[in-house]
Image 1 (tube, rainbow over the protein chains, first blue to last red):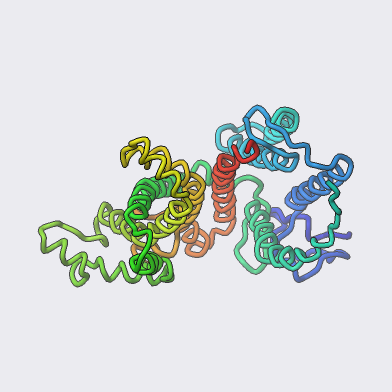
Image 2 (cartoon, rainbow over the protein chains, first blue to last red; image 1 turned 45 degrees about the vertical axis):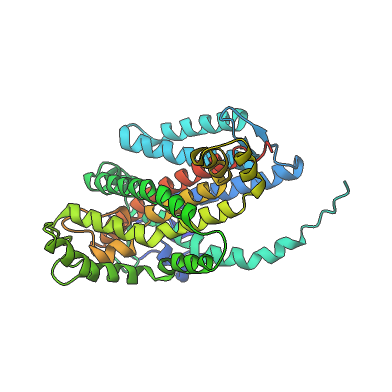
Length: 118
Length: 288
Protein backbone atom coordinates (compact mmCIF):
# COMPACT_ATOMS: atom_id res chain seq x y z
CA UNK A 1 0.00 0.00 0.00
CA UNK A 2 1.17 3.51 -0.77
CA UNK A 3 -0.89 5.68 1.60
CA UNK A 4 -2.06 3.47 4.45
CA UNK A 5 -2.43 6.40 6.80
CA UNK A 6 -5.02 8.02 4.58
CA UNK A 7 -7.51 5.27 5.45
CA UNK A 8 -9.21 6.67 8.54
CA UNK A 9 -9.75 4.37 11.47
CA UNK A 10 -13.29 3.44 12.34
CA UNK A 11 -14.29 2.78 15.92
CA UNK A 12 -13.65 -0.96 15.46
CA UNK A 13 -10.09 -0.45 14.26
CA UNK A 14 -9.08 2.59 16.27
CA UNK A 15 -5.65 2.43 17.88
CA UNK A 16 -4.60 -0.70 16.01
CA UNK A 17 -1.21 -0.42 14.31
CA UNK A 18 -1.41 0.05 10.55
CA UNK A 19 0.92 -1.43 7.99
CA UNK A 20 3.26 1.40 7.01
CA UNK A 21 2.76 2.57 3.45
CA UNK A 22 5.43 3.86 1.12
CA UNK A 23 4.51 7.54 1.48
CA UNK A 24 3.30 7.50 5.08
CA UNK A 25 5.68 10.03 6.55
CA UNK A 26 5.75 10.12 10.34
CA UNK A 27 6.12 13.89 10.52
CA UNK A 28 2.62 14.52 9.21
CA UNK A 29 0.74 11.93 11.24
CA UNK A 30 -0.41 14.77 13.55
CA UNK A 31 -2.31 16.24 10.63
CA UNK A 32 -4.60 13.19 10.71
CA UNK A 33 -5.11 12.97 6.97
CA UNK A 34 -7.94 10.86 5.58
CA UNK A 35 -9.00 10.09 2.03
CA UNK A 36 -12.21 12.19 2.12
CA UNK A 37 -10.47 15.31 3.42
CA UNK A 38 -7.44 14.74 1.17
CA UNK A 39 -9.71 14.46 -1.87
CA UNK A 40 -11.38 17.72 -0.88
CA UNK A 41 -8.04 19.55 -0.92
CA UNK A 42 -6.97 17.75 -4.10
CA UNK A 43 -10.20 19.03 -5.64
CA UNK A 44 -9.41 22.60 -4.56
CA UNK A 45 -5.87 22.28 -5.92
CA UNK A 46 -7.24 20.95 -9.22
CA UNK A 47 -9.68 23.88 -9.39
CA UNK A 48 -6.84 26.36 -8.96
CA UNK A 49 -4.69 24.54 -11.52
CA UNK A 50 -7.65 24.49 -13.87
CA UNK A 51 -8.08 28.25 -13.40
CA UNK A 52 -4.40 28.70 -14.30
CA UNK A 53 -4.80 26.91 -17.62
CA UNK A 54 -8.09 28.67 -18.31
CA UNK A 55 -6.33 31.99 -17.76
CA UNK A 56 -3.51 30.90 -20.11
CA UNK A 57 -6.05 30.02 -22.78
CA UNK A 58 -8.21 33.11 -22.32
CA UNK A 59 -6.27 35.83 -20.44
CA UNK A 60 -7.86 38.74 -18.60
CA UNK A 61 -10.14 36.80 -16.28
CA UNK A 62 -13.26 37.60 -18.32
CA UNK A 63 -14.50 40.45 -16.05
CA UNK A 64 -18.15 41.40 -16.30
CA UNK A 65 -21.10 42.74 -14.37
CA UNK A 66 -23.44 39.91 -13.50
CA UNK A 67 -26.92 39.56 -12.01
CA UNK A 68 -25.69 40.65 -8.58
CA UNK A 69 -24.48 43.92 -10.21
CA UNK A 70 -21.01 43.07 -8.92
CA UNK A 71 -17.94 43.27 -11.10
CA UNK A 72 -16.61 39.73 -11.02
CA UNK A 73 -13.74 37.96 -12.71
CA UNK A 74 -13.43 34.24 -13.18
CA UNK A 75 -11.54 33.92 -9.88
CA UNK A 76 -14.28 35.79 -8.02
CA UNK A 77 -16.84 33.45 -9.49
CA UNK A 78 -14.83 30.41 -8.33
CA UNK A 79 -14.65 31.94 -4.85
CA UNK A 80 -18.41 32.62 -4.79
CA UNK A 81 -19.09 29.05 -5.95
CA UNK A 82 -16.86 27.50 -3.28
CA UNK A 83 -18.17 29.71 -0.48
CA UNK A 84 -21.78 29.09 -1.42
CA UNK A 85 -21.04 25.36 -1.72
CA UNK A 86 -19.80 25.44 1.88
CA UNK A 87 -22.96 27.18 3.07
CA UNK A 88 -25.24 24.92 1.01
CA UNK A 89 -23.62 21.90 2.67
CA UNK A 90 -23.90 23.45 6.14
CA UNK A 91 -27.54 24.35 5.58
CA UNK A 92 -28.21 20.83 4.33
CA UNK A 93 -26.59 19.32 7.44
CA UNK A 94 -28.36 21.69 9.78
CA UNK A 95 -31.84 21.66 8.26
CA UNK A 96 -32.35 18.23 6.67
CA UNK A 97 -31.50 14.60 7.28
CA UNK A 98 -31.13 13.62 3.63
CA UNK A 99 -28.00 12.35 1.95
CA UNK A 100 -25.25 14.96 1.78
CA UNK A 101 -24.49 14.13 -1.86
CA UNK A 102 -27.73 15.91 -2.80
CA UNK A 103 -26.22 19.09 -1.33
CA UNK A 104 -23.10 18.46 -3.42
CA UNK A 105 -25.26 18.15 -6.53
CA UNK A 106 -27.10 21.38 -5.68
CA UNK A 107 -23.74 23.12 -5.16
CA UNK A 108 -22.49 21.88 -8.52
CA UNK A 109 -25.62 23.18 -10.27
CA UNK A 110 -25.36 26.46 -8.39
CA UNK A 111 -21.71 26.93 -9.38
CA UNK A 112 -22.66 26.45 -13.03
CA UNK A 113 -25.23 29.23 -12.55
CA UNK A 114 -22.57 31.38 -10.86
CA UNK A 115 -20.08 30.88 -13.69
CA UNK A 116 -22.74 31.53 -16.29
CA UNK A 117 -24.64 34.53 -14.90
CA UNK A 118 -22.81 36.14 -11.93
CA UNK B 1 0.14 50.65 -25.27
CA UNK B 2 3.18 48.42 -25.30
CA UNK B 3 3.29 46.55 -22.05
CA UNK B 4 6.14 44.20 -21.31
CA UNK B 5 4.97 40.99 -19.76
CA UNK B 6 7.43 39.85 -17.16
CA UNK B 7 6.24 37.49 -14.50
CA UNK B 8 9.57 37.16 -12.69
CA UNK B 9 8.35 39.33 -9.79
CA UNK B 10 6.32 36.34 -8.65
CA UNK B 11 9.55 34.78 -7.37
CA UNK B 12 9.62 37.50 -4.71
CA UNK B 13 6.27 36.28 -3.45
CA UNK B 14 7.59 32.77 -2.78
CA UNK B 15 8.87 33.49 0.80
CA UNK B 16 5.49 34.91 1.78
CA UNK B 17 3.78 31.98 0.16
CA UNK B 18 5.91 29.50 2.13
CA UNK B 19 5.30 31.42 5.36
CA UNK B 20 1.54 31.53 4.83
CA UNK B 21 1.54 27.87 3.88
CA UNK B 22 3.12 26.94 7.19
CA UNK B 23 1.29 29.30 9.51
CA UNK B 24 -2.14 29.30 7.88
CA UNK B 25 -2.75 26.67 5.22
CA UNK B 26 -1.25 23.67 6.99
CA UNK B 27 -3.05 24.39 10.31
CA UNK B 28 -6.30 25.05 8.46
CA UNK B 29 -5.99 21.73 6.62
CA UNK B 30 -5.37 20.04 9.96
CA UNK B 31 -8.49 21.65 11.40
CA UNK B 32 -10.48 20.30 8.45
CA UNK B 33 -9.04 16.84 9.09
CA UNK B 34 -9.81 17.01 12.79
CA UNK B 35 -13.38 18.18 12.22
CA UNK B 36 -14.31 14.80 10.73
CA UNK B 37 -12.66 12.64 13.38
CA UNK B 38 -12.63 11.92 17.09
CA UNK B 39 -9.38 11.84 19.01
CA UNK B 40 -8.24 11.31 22.56
CA UNK B 41 -4.69 12.42 21.86
CA UNK B 42 -1.57 10.38 21.01
CA UNK B 43 -2.30 10.78 17.28
CA UNK B 44 -5.08 8.20 17.47
CA UNK B 45 -8.09 9.18 15.37
CA UNK B 46 -11.41 7.58 14.48
CA UNK B 47 -13.63 8.64 11.59
CA UNK B 48 -16.87 10.36 12.60
CA UNK B 49 -18.06 11.81 9.29
CA UNK B 50 -20.23 14.90 9.50
CA UNK B 51 -21.36 14.18 13.04
CA UNK B 52 -19.58 17.16 14.67
CA UNK B 53 -20.95 19.61 12.13
CA UNK B 54 -24.48 18.35 12.78
CA UNK B 55 -23.88 18.54 16.51
CA UNK B 56 -22.58 22.12 16.36
CA UNK B 57 -25.31 23.30 13.99
CA UNK B 58 -27.97 21.93 16.33
CA UNK B 59 -26.24 22.98 19.55
CA UNK B 60 -28.05 25.50 21.74
CA UNK B 61 -24.72 26.54 23.17
CA UNK B 62 -23.34 27.45 19.74
CA UNK B 63 -26.49 29.39 18.82
CA UNK B 64 -26.27 31.28 22.10
CA UNK B 65 -22.62 32.27 21.75
CA UNK B 66 -23.07 33.16 18.08
CA UNK B 67 -26.05 35.32 19.04
CA UNK B 68 -24.06 37.02 21.79
CA UNK B 69 -21.24 37.62 19.34
CA UNK B 70 -23.51 39.29 16.77
CA UNK B 71 -25.21 41.44 19.43
CA UNK B 72 -21.83 42.51 20.80
CA UNK B 73 -20.43 43.39 17.37
CA UNK B 74 -23.63 45.25 16.45
CA UNK B 75 -23.60 47.36 19.63
CA UNK B 76 -19.89 48.07 19.21
CA UNK B 77 -20.36 49.32 15.65
CA UNK B 78 -23.45 51.32 16.63
CA UNK B 79 -21.52 53.19 19.34
CA UNK B 80 -18.02 53.44 17.88
CA UNK B 81 -18.83 54.71 14.40
CA UNK B 82 -20.94 57.78 15.29
CA UNK B 83 -18.74 58.51 18.30
CA UNK B 84 -15.55 58.19 16.24
CA UNK B 85 -16.89 60.48 13.50
CA UNK B 86 -18.09 63.01 16.09
CA UNK B 87 -14.68 63.12 17.80
CA UNK B 88 -12.89 63.41 14.45
CA UNK B 89 -15.13 66.37 13.51
CA UNK B 90 -14.28 68.22 16.70
CA UNK B 91 -10.54 67.61 16.48
CA UNK B 92 -8.45 70.66 15.50
CA UNK B 93 -7.22 70.82 11.90
CA UNK B 94 -4.05 72.83 12.58
CA UNK B 95 -1.92 74.15 15.37
CA UNK B 96 -0.43 72.53 18.45
CA UNK B 97 -3.68 70.70 19.19
CA UNK B 98 -3.17 68.32 16.25
CA UNK B 99 -0.21 66.31 17.60
CA UNK B 100 -1.67 66.36 21.12
CA UNK B 101 -5.01 64.95 19.92
CA UNK B 102 -3.36 62.41 17.62
CA UNK B 103 -1.09 61.09 20.35
CA UNK B 104 -3.93 60.97 22.88
CA UNK B 105 -6.04 59.10 20.35
CA UNK B 106 -3.31 56.58 19.53
CA UNK B 107 -2.56 55.75 23.17
CA UNK B 108 -5.31 53.14 23.70
CA UNK B 109 -4.37 51.44 20.41
CA UNK B 110 -0.82 50.89 21.63
CA UNK B 111 -1.77 49.00 24.77
CA UNK B 112 -1.63 45.19 24.50
CA UNK B 113 -5.05 43.56 24.63
CA UNK B 114 -4.46 41.52 27.77
CA UNK B 115 -3.22 44.66 29.55
CA UNK B 116 -6.43 46.44 28.54
CA UNK B 117 -8.40 43.56 30.03
CA UNK B 118 -6.40 43.61 33.27
CA UNK B 119 -6.63 47.40 33.54
CA UNK B 120 -10.38 47.41 33.15
CA UNK B 121 -10.76 44.48 35.48
CA UNK B 122 -9.03 46.40 38.28
CA UNK B 123 -10.65 49.71 37.27
CA UNK B 124 -14.14 48.18 37.44
CA UNK B 125 -13.81 46.05 40.58
CA UNK B 126 -16.88 46.93 42.68
CA UNK B 127 -15.02 47.27 46.00
CA UNK B 128 -11.63 48.79 45.18
CA UNK B 129 -11.78 49.79 41.50
CA UNK B 130 -12.21 53.48 40.73
CA UNK B 131 -15.13 52.96 38.32
CA UNK B 132 -16.83 50.24 40.36
CA UNK B 133 -16.39 52.00 43.68
CA UNK B 134 -17.56 55.36 42.31
CA UNK B 135 -20.66 53.85 40.72
CA UNK B 136 -21.52 52.03 43.93
CA UNK B 137 -21.03 55.10 46.10
CA UNK B 138 -23.29 57.03 43.70
CA UNK B 139 -26.00 54.54 44.59
CA UNK B 140 -25.85 52.20 41.59
CA UNK B 141 -25.82 48.50 42.33
CA UNK B 142 -22.83 47.73 40.13
CA UNK B 143 -20.93 44.44 40.16
CA UNK B 144 -19.60 43.17 36.85
CA UNK B 145 -18.45 39.89 38.35
CA UNK B 146 -21.96 38.88 39.37
CA UNK B 147 -24.52 40.75 37.25
CA UNK B 148 -24.61 39.97 33.56
CA UNK B 149 -25.91 43.42 32.57
CA UNK B 150 -22.98 45.06 34.32
CA UNK B 151 -20.56 42.61 32.71
CA UNK B 152 -21.91 43.55 29.25
CA UNK B 153 -21.77 47.25 30.12
CA UNK B 154 -18.14 46.95 31.23
CA UNK B 155 -17.07 44.87 28.24
CA UNK B 156 -18.67 47.30 25.80
CA UNK B 157 -17.24 50.32 27.61
CA UNK B 158 -13.80 48.72 27.51
CA UNK B 159 -14.02 48.02 23.80
CA UNK B 160 -15.30 51.53 23.09
CA UNK B 161 -12.38 52.95 25.06
CA UNK B 162 -9.90 50.71 23.29
CA UNK B 163 -11.05 50.94 19.69
CA UNK B 164 -13.01 54.15 19.05
CA UNK B 165 -9.65 55.84 18.39
CA UNK B 166 -9.19 53.70 15.32
CA UNK B 167 -12.43 55.06 13.84
CA UNK B 168 -11.39 58.58 14.92
CA UNK B 169 -7.99 58.34 13.23
CA UNK B 170 -9.45 56.92 10.03
CA UNK B 171 -12.23 59.53 9.89
CA UNK B 172 -9.75 62.30 10.68
CA UNK B 173 -7.55 61.19 7.79
CA UNK B 174 -10.63 61.13 5.55
CA UNK B 175 -11.70 64.61 6.68
CA UNK B 176 -8.24 66.06 6.14
CA UNK B 177 -8.12 64.85 2.56
CA UNK B 178 -11.12 67.00 1.58
CA UNK B 179 -10.09 69.98 -0.54
CA UNK B 180 -10.90 73.44 0.96
CA UNK B 181 -12.67 74.31 -2.31
CA UNK B 182 -15.62 72.10 -1.28
CA UNK B 183 -16.09 74.04 1.94
CA UNK B 184 -15.77 77.37 0.13
CA UNK B 185 -18.41 76.30 -2.38
CA UNK B 186 -20.68 75.22 0.47
CA UNK B 187 -20.22 78.59 2.16
CA UNK B 188 -21.11 80.47 -1.02
CA UNK B 189 -24.24 78.33 -1.37
CA UNK B 190 -25.16 79.09 2.22
CA UNK B 191 -25.10 75.46 3.34
CA UNK B 192 -25.76 74.73 6.99
CA UNK B 193 -23.31 72.76 9.13
CA UNK B 194 -25.49 69.67 8.77
CA UNK B 195 -25.58 70.05 4.97
CA UNK B 196 -21.78 70.28 4.88
CA UNK B 197 -21.56 67.08 6.90
CA UNK B 198 -24.26 65.25 4.98
CA UNK B 199 -23.30 66.20 1.41
CA UNK B 200 -19.55 66.83 1.59
CA UNK B 201 -17.88 65.20 4.57
CA UNK B 202 -19.84 61.95 4.79
CA UNK B 203 -19.59 61.06 1.07
CA UNK B 204 -15.88 61.94 1.09
CA UNK B 205 -15.35 59.73 4.12
CA UNK B 206 -17.21 56.80 2.58
CA UNK B 207 -14.08 54.79 1.77
CA UNK B 208 -12.34 55.18 5.12
CA UNK B 209 -15.59 54.51 6.94
CA UNK B 210 -16.14 51.27 5.02
CA UNK B 211 -12.62 50.31 5.99
CA UNK B 212 -13.34 51.26 9.60
CA UNK B 213 -16.53 49.17 9.62
CA UNK B 214 -14.67 46.20 8.12
CA UNK B 215 -11.80 46.42 10.61
CA UNK B 216 -14.04 46.99 13.62
CA UNK B 217 -16.34 44.20 12.52
CA UNK B 218 -13.53 41.68 12.14
CA UNK B 219 -11.78 42.65 15.35
CA UNK B 220 -14.90 42.67 17.49
CA UNK B 221 -16.22 39.50 15.92
CA UNK B 222 -13.01 37.69 16.80
CA UNK B 223 -12.56 39.37 20.21
CA UNK B 224 -10.94 37.04 22.71
CA UNK B 225 -8.24 38.43 24.98
CA UNK B 226 -10.05 41.41 26.52
CA UNK B 227 -13.24 39.64 27.67
CA UNK B 228 -11.15 36.62 28.64
CA UNK B 229 -9.14 38.72 31.08
CA UNK B 230 -12.04 40.97 32.13
CA UNK B 231 -14.89 38.53 32.70
CA UNK B 232 -13.66 35.13 31.51
CA UNK B 233 -17.02 34.74 29.77
CA UNK B 234 -18.92 35.18 33.00
CA UNK B 235 -20.92 35.61 35.06
CA UNK B 236 -22.23 32.23 34.02
CA UNK B 237 -22.20 32.39 30.23
CA UNK B 238 -23.29 36.02 29.96
CA UNK B 239 -20.27 37.30 28.03
CA UNK B 240 -19.20 33.96 26.59
CA UNK B 241 -18.50 35.12 23.04
CA UNK B 242 -17.82 32.79 20.15
CA UNK B 243 -14.03 32.70 20.44
CA UNK B 244 -14.15 32.23 24.23
CA UNK B 245 -16.59 29.38 23.78
CA UNK B 246 -14.41 27.83 21.10
CA UNK B 247 -11.32 27.85 23.29
CA UNK B 248 -13.30 26.41 26.19
CA UNK B 249 -14.42 23.58 23.94
CA UNK B 250 -11.01 22.91 22.40
CA UNK B 251 -8.69 23.33 25.36
CA UNK B 252 -11.01 23.14 28.37
CA UNK B 253 -12.95 20.08 27.34
CA UNK B 254 -10.41 18.74 24.82
CA UNK B 255 -13.27 18.15 22.34
CA UNK B 256 -11.01 18.67 19.36
CA UNK B 257 -13.44 17.31 16.76
CA UNK B 258 -16.43 19.51 17.66
CA UNK B 259 -14.10 22.46 18.26
CA UNK B 260 -12.60 22.00 14.78
CA UNK B 261 -16.08 21.87 13.24
CA UNK B 262 -17.04 24.97 15.19
CA UNK B 263 -13.94 26.87 14.06
CA UNK B 264 -14.68 26.01 10.43
CA UNK B 265 -18.24 27.32 10.75
CA UNK B 266 -16.87 30.42 12.51
CA UNK B 267 -14.30 30.87 9.73
CA UNK B 268 -16.94 30.54 7.02
CA UNK B 269 -19.16 33.16 8.69
CA UNK B 270 -16.23 35.61 8.93
CA UNK B 271 -15.25 34.85 5.33
CA UNK B 272 -18.81 35.44 4.08
CA UNK B 273 -19.28 38.74 5.90
CA UNK B 274 -15.84 40.00 4.83
CA UNK B 275 -16.62 39.06 1.25
CA UNK B 276 -19.92 40.96 1.40
CA UNK B 277 -18.14 44.02 2.83
CA UNK B 278 -15.37 43.76 0.26
CA UNK B 279 -17.85 43.47 -2.62
CA UNK B 280 -19.84 46.46 -1.38
CA UNK B 281 -16.61 48.46 -1.04
CA UNK B 282 -15.46 47.55 -4.52
CA UNK B 283 -18.88 47.79 -6.12
CA UNK B 284 -18.53 51.20 -7.70
CA UNK B 285 -14.76 51.13 -8.14
CA UNK B 286 -14.88 49.60 -11.59
CA UNK B 287 -17.26 52.24 -12.91
CA UNK B 288 -14.97 55.18 -12.15
